[in-house]
Image (tube, rainbow, N blue to C red; front, side, top):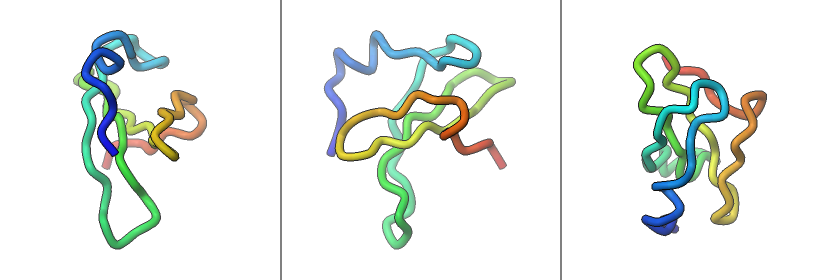
Length: 64
């Protein structure tokens, strides 16, 4: 389920305040869509559960 474009424009990474972009997670795993930070030094990926972004740093996946 895609998030509304207007919502993506106002959301920011809680850790570094950079913009977020939506990416699809792996289809064969439990991960669904994610919001990935566009900051060069950050790159955290926040889960989207049941269409609701979980913007908690403790819940974010660290970049590889």
